Length: 520
Image (cartoon, rainbow, N blue to C red):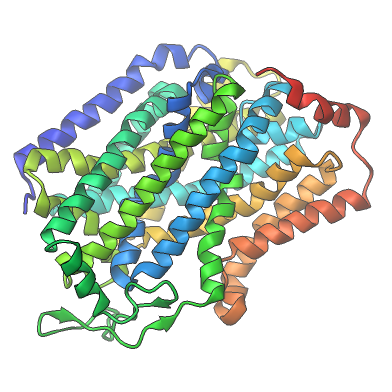
């Protein structure tokens, strides 16, 4: 083990210094205006757009949550979720990115997602903007908390230090470079972090196969675990009264595997629907330099996601063969990537590789902080409270919001037994159902009107909350991932209410009919 090893600390320290310096390098340019601070002046090239979108989306969930699920219960849950996410990534770039880039500029140069929805429907009372900003605050506080959990688990596992102290330290590093550098620093560090994340995953995957004695030995070991490699069954660890897996004769005990039927397969696949409503991804579409560069970004992003997700799932599976009794709960299993890195890599390189985990958390939580700040400052403060607010006042409010969200995220992350996978799945459903149906209808259906948009957003968010708390525990078909029913009901609400109320104005429909002709 390399806990407290000087070379690990040195490698991570170098990494931290680099990302903070990037923040300061972009500080002057980012602070030139609120558009630069929140959207980078719409100047991102295809590589920066693609890797920034994917790195900010995946977060520490990719390197800890997903491998942890695969390690503890086998291939099925992790595999179907990964397939859903890969398909969702491609479709989002294919059917949303180019249209949103064009429409967001045509719709009064919208620089945030709430801005776009409000301007798209000419919402003079800013109803949509306010609802969207509140939803962003609610679910991003949860999301930021999941990223801080990742930071705490990383440092605690690596160095044996206090979880809470390390979690707060990681949160403060993220806050510093986001606070100073704004969107450009976030996206530039995302490019570095995206490359580091995929490199770390591939290196640890190859090392894990070698440590397990090769492909044949690994597969033979895992096939002996009932249901572990099945796509239609889920391995069932035998747990004691404390919820920890029982170990006998140096081997973990598994019972009869659970059925992984159609309901759970759909629950995994529908993760892909969430992409249509992810603010941290959609804002990247809005900031790309030109819509003609979307195709190149789509290819880069899709390849990155497929390689990264595949490696993450396989690391979890192979980890069970390499260290079969190391983790006895799913929450603990989320450290499998870290421990394998410690076992397989030289100290300095281990420090660089595990920085990939911190990179993932930083790229995501910085985006969440920034979007939360823009939602409050631009959409609530300037949109509702002080419509004549200056750029300087908007940015002051944005930074105060960063502080508030930071503190909420820290409070949520104080429980070190939190499962990153479960926390992320809840917030993912919230955004996907609240914004996804409305985004698709906004871009593709000219008959969508303001009442329909409001109804869809409220029904989507409300269904996630109600389904998760009251319906899902009933089991059976009701146990399906809440994103699916919430997305469907949100979509139906938009259609039904739009058709039952007044058609949008000619000004709105004329804008819709012509936005694709915009050369942006």
